[in-house]
Length: 418
Image (tube, rainbow, N blue to C red; front, side, top):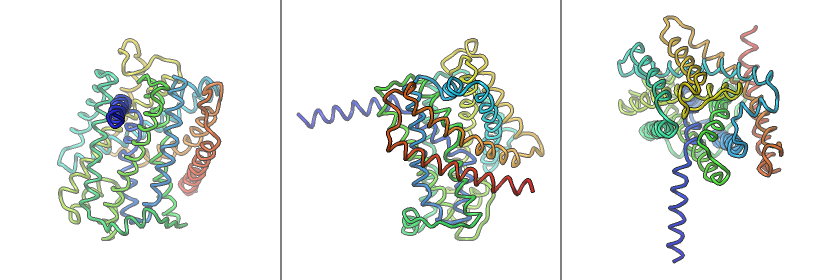
């Protein structure tokens, strides 16, 4: 009887989780976008397995930060931008949203560039792939409702398995991979430091905290579903870490071993062919296409959510256009600008990507500080504020990220000024 009850309880919880899952897995998965895959590819190709150890603490930090954002959405029923406006004032919110808008437009350009680059590997011109991709992501949001859109996004999350397969097909020396994963090998070499900061920056992006909280609110999750939401966030963070792990391992086992230097994820996909075979290369390229198109859907959506929350405008994919016209117009404009820039001849895409990452770096410390102040506000969170142990862990994580972000900005910006 006890066994029967346990099975019944297990299947009941499983069904609840399947109904609730989405925001955490989707948000974390999108983090492995064109910029993320490029960063992990460069890390493996240029530094071998030496940065694999960093994925464990980075994944833990990602889960902690995403859990806090999801918890705030569940308890308050409000998005992150709305809470910032209510607690820090309109002026602070305006500048934060302006920085987020500019950074995310740059990021969206990068995603459509990833769509173009990945499809060119298969012989499809960017003048075909980018307009079709832009139309698809626009139509998905315009015609879909939250449930349909979430299922599409969850389906896209599954496609990241292509990077796991690529990593296995590259046949890395697993004993060395395991050792590099559990034994840190830190270096003060400036290039190594910059790459470490790049991995952190691409894994924990400012827009993610806005999107997951808005997504939790729109899905209507409440405190009864909290433990399942934590599981959703944890699974999402672990999947992100696993995809990063196999991407680095694949490039380290092939490109680094043979001294191949690359600049983009497209270069990595093409360079894999002679060492890991056509199938591995094609899977890597297809993964890049999926990651880019997936993020090209989410980034404009996250931006539209945030700005409309901050301004007090109607928003949400469950609303009709006439109910939330500003939300849909803003979403469409970001897609048009992002895709249009990619199609322009001689557009300075690399510079734009660089500047968007600088803005991400500037915005991230403020986002983390706002988030930790808000989650510890008893008037907002009641008994769901952080515990002392969780505060120590979360503030320490934030301090490390902020310090590395500042170092990244100093490393990149000061030489550029000089």
